[in-house]
Amino acid sequence: MVVVACATVRTLEIKRQLDPHDLAAVAELLALAERADGHRAVDDHRWLDMAEGGRASHAGLVAWESGHDHPVGYTQVSRGRHSWALDMVIDPHHRYDARDIGPEMLRGAIALIAGEGGGHVHLWVYQPTGAHDEIAAQVGLRRGRDLLQMRRTLPVPVEGNQLDLRPFRPGHDEARWLEVNNRAFAWHPEQGGWDLETLTTHQHEPWFDAEGFLLHERDGRLAGFCWTKVHHDHEPPLGELYVVAVDPDFQGLGLGRALVLAGLDWLHRERGLTVAMLYVDAADARAVGLYDSLGFKVDHVDRAYVGDVPAAEPGQETAPTPTAEPTA
Image (cartoon, rainbow, N blue to C red):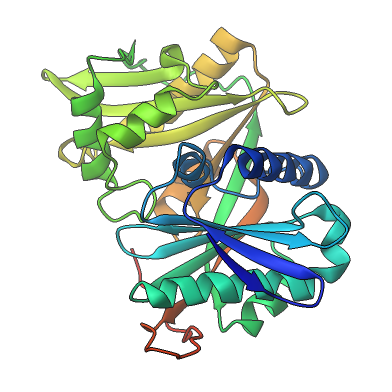
């Protein structure tokens, strides 16, 4: 653990692993922010990596303030295949000081990245505001990718012939699913490059339901899938199309649309849900067009602020250099 003095009353702890006390404190902070904002501040995939014990490619930065027994902020640093991802949350009761707390945490994260060789950085912000633009600019990051959350009501009208589907079988389908997922998302910074450990971690989550993990086989091969997720903590509960993909060998057959419809039908018919949602990159015009044609409307926008962090030299202070966002 490294402790960095941020101001006269704040300290920033940089940890490779969160001990039970810190894990509970950060989890409560995330829950508090989610209740206030209506959305989760840290990506599920990346939080799982940290909560399950952390890895060399992950770190958590916990901001504490004197006079308080709870953290006032948390930033997670996660190294992906192509870039570093940053997720940041500030206690709703301390956001009057966000323009100080935010940059302090981000500068600590950027220094950590620089010390590990630097690289491209994404700071993910959910429902960004002008304050987020200002905080990002203070540490040299600029607006990059926008991620749309789209929603629609259920049920959906039935279209044409139904696909033959079966549920995912834990202990049997992992290898084939990983192959298709990684082929379909070879370009994707978060969903691509999964391994068995990543998938198994998700299978152990309380929300995992193999019955709603729908597989479509064709010619003896896994051709595509629709993985659903139910958010019971929303009112009304939300059904999410968590991951939908078609193996590249089977693209162009209309399977993507059919899998989306199958997932929506399952969420309504089997779980009684009346609202569905999904996330899609705003730059993915083909996918956005598909979802728009199926009645989805944008609920809100999440954003990545981007930049390049050079590798640190001994004793050097490092800030990111804004650069053009690479296309997928």
